[in-house]
Length: 375
Ligand SMILES: [Zn+2]
Ligand SMILES: [Zn+2]
Image 1 (tube, rainbow, N blue to C red):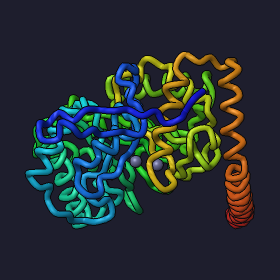
Image 2: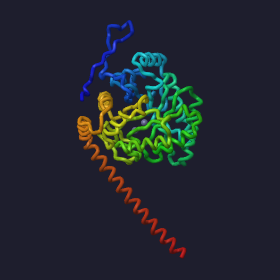
Image 3: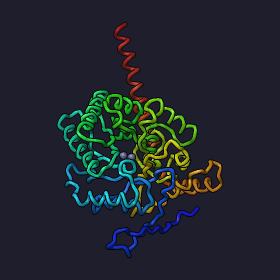
Image 4: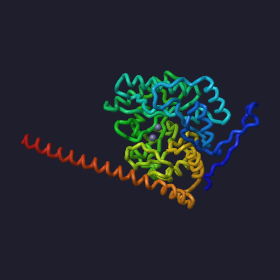
């Protein structure tokens, strides 16, 4: 296969620069049935994200609407809003369906501390208002954590805040991302997400984003056709297809059930290339943003290559000779990192197993002693 950069030339339409041409690194396949894209940078102004998306040949993209690690950021300037709309039009991105901003990492709408919860809500609402200013129809965020509080109450708090945010905005759909299962995180199992959606009043304004790495890390195996189908059957039965609004595409550096949120390049990790081949041939995922968040080196070139890889995987069968060769090639490139993370995982699980055994033994002795006392 050829994953070489194909030069794509788009003529500038404005009269002023009619003679100038903008060149993109990767040709965009607008006829592709899937909206393969990636998380792109917005440094230098939010409208830069559109040029970055074109550069990697993306049919959809994610971005931050403000610095994801700061509480307050300056408002988006009016001229940036106009430029964003102009470039959406020019490059053919529908902001209502093709753009999936990612929320700030520290927003925890389920925080049991009322003051912190309110601060999180302020930042969340600010993000949603930014979406609507840019005419963006989807907003993806991490559902947060119950911390040391009660999990059920945390789900209720989250749902209450979603209801409140829906009332405070006009149209943007709030998309809940599934999590990798560390600690008291909400959304590491599908039931959490279902419970929250059940408490959302306007169900047309809520959706779900499935991250392939998080799913696998949380203990749902999706690495082959049978397991993949099993997971999506569970998704269908628990949540329902109508809520599936986006996919985050990442391989996983850590093994199944490791509860580690460690993204890896496609085919390098413990998931392997097969799940991405399955996705590229799964019609149910057409028309929703499928966004890469794999590690990048210096620039976004990796994304350009990975989007071309995903397009190439369409119509490939699992026994295709070229596909098998590609899968093995990528797997080899990730072998060293997989070995390192497997070792870490095994050390951790054996420590936990020992600790559990010790606790069980102490429990047994405790039981025996208490029984002795009773008798
Ligand atoms: Zn995320
Ligand atoms: Zn992640």
